[in-house]
Length: 101
Image (tube, rainbow, N blue to C red):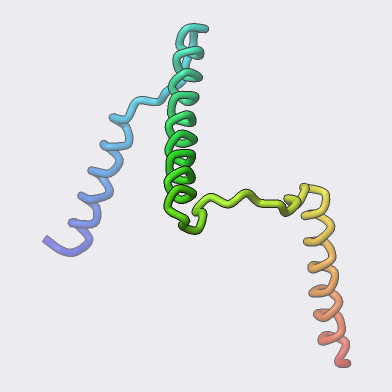
């Protein structure tokens, strides 16, 4: 057996594992509500863990792990403007190089 046949078998086995995984596509209202409940429960677990960690750090005078950000997040419009500005600069440089300046 060559190296290629081992790679083929590995890829073949990986495809079977993916096919056996069930997708979570709710069809009824009850299934959708159950899905939303599970998602909410996991979010709550994460928030509770963060809160407990922060309380522990405050009690023991440690630096905070989860600091609140006071920075304004970039909107899609601002990101688009920034990217367009960068692209314009790059294209301008390309034209200058092509021109021979």
